[in-house]
Image (cartoon, rainbow, N blue to C red):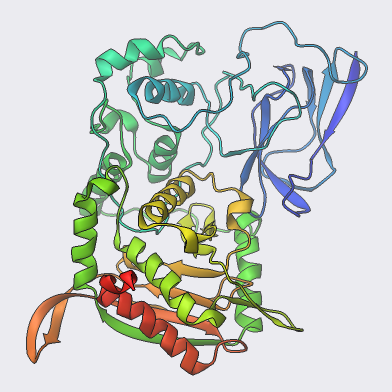
Length: 476
């Protein structure tokens, strides 16, 4: 028997510290190779750490909520072998067998119900750090507290049409029983709630009891819209009552993790790059018609299409005509990028992130739509990886989903241009000398004036507006 002091590892993000968000184990618990034992939050993402050892947890050295430097011991494990890498331990109550490699997102009823069963047993998490052993990640079936996984990304339409029904809940439930799961508490087992981990996290954040939500999912599962609808109804009801003020006169939120990184990046950007902004009102009626036709096209079956897709294509088209907006400033030179890693600003419970679609200039309309949809889902689930937020070249921020007409966005550090897409709504618009109702939006761009002069900024935004007004120009 030997003791191993497990240090906080460098998760490969170039970061020096992380916060202990939640322990997945307690002293006396047995851990197996690659079992997730703690969840940490870096300045970029939420990460689950797998154990490189097998043995018994002797001591937790750091409290939840504490921020520690890389290399600091955080856990003591008593191992059965002197080298710390013992042979696989026999199964004990509360441990799950090693899981197979993570499958693609579940599309059928069986996997959704199984995922829900895992969620109820406590199998929730964010990004997963690759383990050190040969086997796949193994997770404890021990009951644990929910962890933030959901995210609301301002990446287009808020509502995603439900997938066609695959199987009724009554037929899917027995399939889930084939996957071993820990016994649930009696009170919980009486509530047959089917909801994925991000939906459960969203419900917790909004104060919604899932047992009160009417499910509308294809197999009787609770969807994101179901939770929001219940929260809205509850909010309306609460507004009828006299609201109670909190006992404390103020709330103090520690500045750390993602929020600290955002603050540093925004201050650096705002006070380093001289921002200049331009705006344009745009008739987006033909874009709305084009989106409608794409949704009805068999080529886009099963793919989410929104005005953001046309905006993304417009940005790529305008970059080709004005390449210096897709550049990077250094004190020695201006680096013009001949590829477009298109960033999409996303608001999540942990703060603003900007994942990007790599080499978007080479994608077809369908490929770009699929990439944007995947980026959206990943951000909402809180699983965006650090690599997906690096090396962006130009950014879109879709403030229209919040009902905002326009704004003056701050540049994403390392880039020289960002464009804000405002809400698209019907307004009176003069067409051929007559006032008609048209779908109108406002686009606003901010630019680094060290690289982009006023004429280039104006031409670039005018080119983006031209595509929004007439998407057929994309055929040129």
